Image (cartoon, rainbow, N blue to C red; front, side, top):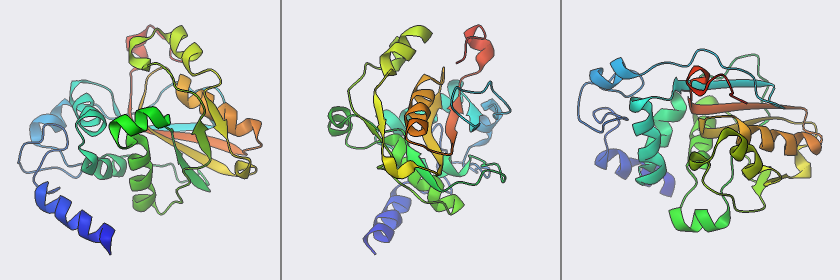
Length: 221
């Protein structure tokens, strides 16, 4: 009852049918919640190189100026209501047999500072939209890490090495990891490796945005 009330109040303050998920302006929106200008500036995800220990990957958008606004508003500007339309834009392949959805976890220090985990909000909305099961305990972050955005590709791998621990309840499950942006895939790979070390059957990954590998000199993983 409380969650429905919160959702009703949120929609009253930020009407999903009139406020663009990217620029926030009131306008006539498309099925993904975008105004015509932002819709024209988005690039839909098509394909990307595979990630180590990931059995399948998908995203809604390529990362560009328009899609960056969406995830940054969600991540840094407390626009938590954006998790729902962003998650709805992610298409999950029908052949993926998913037992549980696990968000990429935040360290408790960063969670306390921000007040929420944007990946968990995306995962929860994805589960509601696709009829999947959320499990926030399958993967935990056992040490804090530096912000990935300021690191080189090699630095990203070193930064997250050994940063995650999986719960033994993942054994035999097909798990979908959910996050906001894939850049090199280092974080997703490290989480997947932790899950498979405990006997997870398959690990898939879905993000709102994916950085175009052609813009990173081909060094994507």
